[in-house]
Image (cartoon, rainbow, N blue to C red; front, side):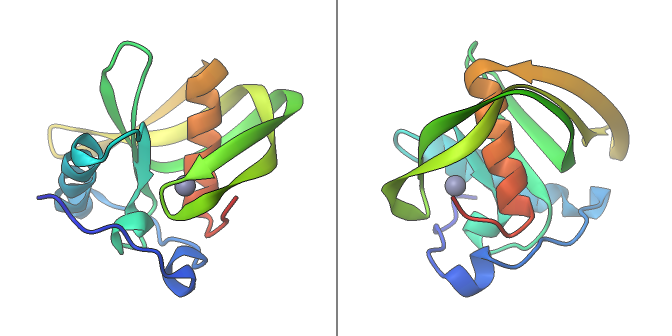
Length: 139
Ligand SMILES: [Zn+2]
């Protein structure tokens, strides 16, 4: 179901609660809403008003990924990036890492499975932006 995007800082600045397999419906809404949003490659659950640590993003090959409870383990190659956010109009300068190691969970056959993955480039930047959202941090 396509949901409305939230622009309320009181919701967006709340650290999100840990997500569970029961939150699969929220994850689906996130995927639907992301697909319907123009010029958007990533979306966190609190941007549709659900303060659960779930995010969806589209990778370089146009594949959609949903990550539950993402956490950054390691970042290499700090640089300053210019970023925009669906929830805020203005372009902001923010410190990002070129390469990150991230732990997260993925829903497989109705159960959350722990994963670890390295990301680089634009996907790494999106994932860091998503993790910030899950922590209630806005660029
Ligand atoms: Zn954002």
